View 1 (cartoon, one colour):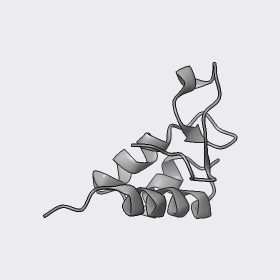
View 2: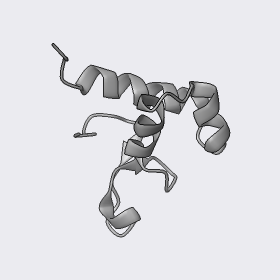
View 3: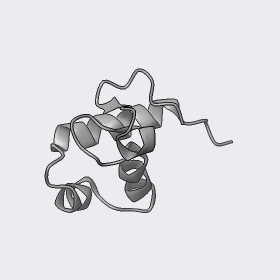
View 4: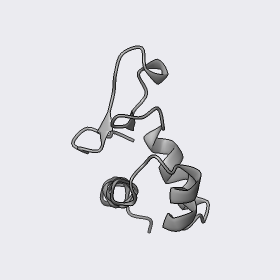
Length: 72
């Protein structure tokens, strides 16, 4: 998935092999989404990543949901 256009996500050469991470952290954006898709609630994700603000978690998931292909 392309995270281009999501203000909460950055790619930094040399940080997590250049993979998209939550801005200012080393948490992969795809990890947040994977947790959500696997059934974790926003509260559970927040507990697992306490240094990521809840608003950022919500914004990342909302961006993912706008970008993912529609399932027929």
